[in-house]
Image 1 (cartoon, rainbow, N blue to C red):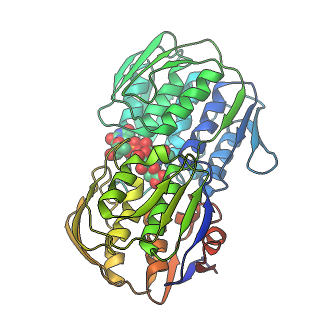
Image 2: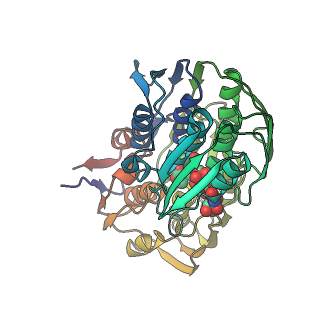
Length: 421
Ligand code: EPZ
């Protein structure tokens, strides 16, 4: 029987919540392990489904992931198993595409089905930026019925301009280029903090990468990489999500610990416009109940702009704000479809087109039986349920637990009435 969350809304939420290691930083260290035969110690690893999938993928490719105490693990090279990426894993999570480049760089070949795992892009999310980049570095790309086979004797450095800014595309080609012959220049790169954190780690094990965190990254190929320690940065999306929860509940003081407020400047400038009472410290944020909450629209944008991964939670907050605002989701085609579920809960939302909704607030929300359509919409529904009147059931909670560690216990710690059954 599929599990679901049962939430009794309207409770006072107050207290402290600690932020875990960033999912979108953690997923990228496992493919990097294919690039070296030395051990890698990983710390501050979030205990979430996607990380478990990434570890299974690495194990299938011949490495051992040894769980250490707490949130640490050690990745040990065992034997180079140049095999195809296991289809059942590739279909489960999109970040599996990150393993293709390192496999190509160290085995000279990689075979895999089109990655699945995310419903927020229209159709199957494209991988043309990856394939074009590998081809530019000298790989032969063969595709048959959504199955890909890549071969390359030796990858060589190339000049690559990303048609669309892609975080995993930037990270994958940056990593792969470390072992190519010669220099690779990547342009129109993603500038997310996770990209910079990955480059910093790669340089610590012998890579030569300049410019990560800017739109142009220069990688000088080296013969081999060593081993080292990767301390995963706090999850800025989790921190932003809980800050928005506090602003939406608006009935108690909430302290968000172990976070990096400087990674969320686009959220804080919006909080200023709404009138949220918050205070930033070096590694924490305090959110207090605010007298007024004015509607203020957003347009999602690559980092450092407003993160698309925070749009769903912010949309829920806007149902409680005074006035009308436009939410413009520029990155994904289907990420606003979940607003239909908020309308069922009582929100006043008009969809102008798949990328834009107008929200009129404030409206009272009522508990409903819902199903989580994707990871970030799922946590947004949890926020809506926590502030709604009455009981809400949320199904398909795999799409929430794959990105938020121990979410039931942590929300209970704030006073939420939430159970998993
Ligand atoms: C990363 O996805 C994150 N995932 C996403 O978080 C995040 O929403 C996204 O960056 C944007 O910030 C991970 O880091 C694992 P994309 P990424 O598919 O890099 C187009 C979450 O909720 N594109 O590159 O995989 C694509 O259509 C997830 O944690 C191509 O056209 O994002 C989209 O418009 C969701 N061709 C844009 O780029 C390609 O080959 C970005 O999407 C690849 C991408």
